[in-house]
Amino acid sequence: MTWSEMRPLLSQASWDTLYMVGWSTLIAVVLGLPLGVLLVLTDRGGLLSNTVVNKVIGQIVNIARSMPFIILMVALMSFTRLITGTTIGREAAIVPLAIGAIPFFARLVETAVREVDGGLVEAVQSMGGNTWAIVRKVLVPESLPSLISSTTTTIVTLIGYSAMAGTVGAGGLGDIAIRYGFQRFETQLMWITVAILAVVISVIQFAGDLAARRLDRRSGHSGPAPRLRLLRGRREPAPASAPVKNADTTDTAEVSAPTS
View 1: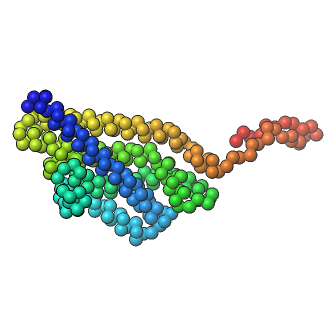
View 2: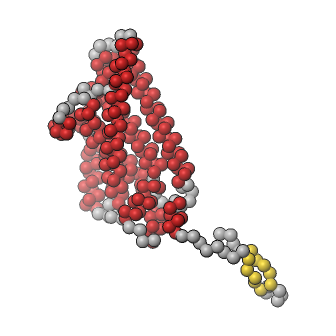
């Protein structure tokens, strides 16, 4: 197979892979983020502590995560047909990809949110903030760099899942590698597909790490979040100096006040 023959195949397959991974990531973030936060809130000692709810959600997440993706894809065929009207093609592949990624991302969110300093939560509580305010102003903003890293990990995992989905007719680079590289012995095309996947994953990982580092610097984790500093209000400035009486003499001396 010549390069002119391979190029349109690779272009369409790359677009199909990005399409599947993009939509699956969006659904996973939208549904996995609240699920992960809920796991933290309902845990023992959490703001909405409820052992039964936490155990039920945790078990559902564990079962969904423990299922191999290729089996999950087959098991969800009826549901996929109900949603998309077919079980073949990139639109059909989005359903199992998203369902497989939601519990995975939720566990990553849970880990990221648990790293938030409990003192910040107590500070908002002392100022009368409710659970929604704590989630919105503390838990999510403070864990944002970790959430970006978690999203990057999810995208990379979904690219691997999409390659597996290609084996059952989902399209994308995995489909090209199997149909042409393995079944038709087009070894060159298969290695080009592998190289494209490696480049795409490297670029996404680099962009995700860069975004997480910049957000980490802006949030200033060495001190309280800017919003919390505003909520605490401004301290009254200390007087520049105050006269004190010397114990040995009757003279007064100027003593500098503490600056903090």
